[in-house]
Image 1 (cartoon, rainbow, N blue to C red):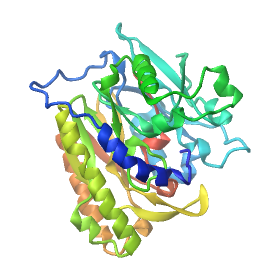
Image 2 (image 1 turned 45 degrees about the vertical axis):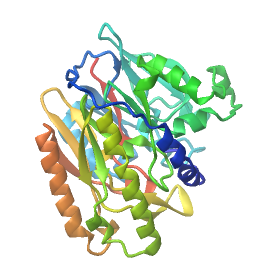
Image 3 (image 1 turned 60 degrees about the vertical axis):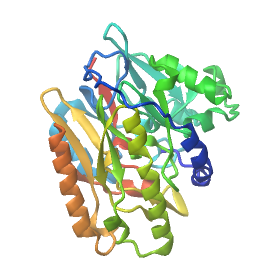
Image 4 (image 1 turned 90 degrees about the vertical axis):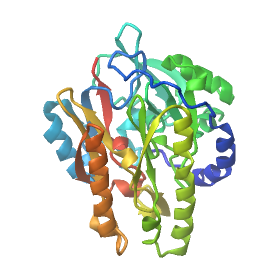
Length: 372
């Protein structure tokens, strides 16, 4: 993930604007058809996969996840052995989701890929996938952690508009046609590239005091008609004793409550699952500057192997829990498991290791190639 220490403050100032921009579409009168692997448009996470790629560094940061992926995918779990270049932070390229292409299904059923840009020339050039596809350049700055899709809609946060309004003079961006763009132009360019209408791109408010502004901490599309959203229950707030963290938890509770009614107006079935209250943790990326971390089920990992549909969900380390949270965490994980089983996904749990301290979880550290 690419952290900006001042982004959380800008997120709070942008919240009112984002709420004003949220769509007010009426509830659909009829349920649309279920998604198929050949649906044209952006490829959702719940589509059948070809393989999953992780960095070799994951064995240091979250070994349980790496083992789980190998156990359930076998040879379809590729480990990228390339070391992080000396000019980058040690874990900068652990976050392969951010650097993977945007996959798009063409009208004839073939698979295409788009290559967004990154401000860092080193991360911009880092392609984690050994794919035969040649991605088409997309002259927008974008991290893939900030996009989820049902196929019918594409969900992004205000970060997409904020970053693409900035003037970057880096040669690698200029070569690919990057220039500052107004919000309408950014949305038009992205919608055209993905094969969706501009009105089908939905801006989502980011979480309070969350440094990445990534939407995959908030929404998990389960199928074309169903989206999971985490919620913060009063029982989770009751475990928070620090005054500042408690104030933050109340803000997060209110922020998460915004999403279900908006999604229902767009015609979706919304599944809400509880999560633990956010916590301030020391970050190896930002020494001396704790970040706000979220144990969110939305950043679990959907894996449709074709013969089975699995979801790997985060399990908190005991040392990261507050006093009194262990029983609540176990109860929440049991509710997550039942909900996913009811939705047709077999749940598995893996220890989060060090990932929480970097601001991400399981979707963040995996690059997924859909089936062609």
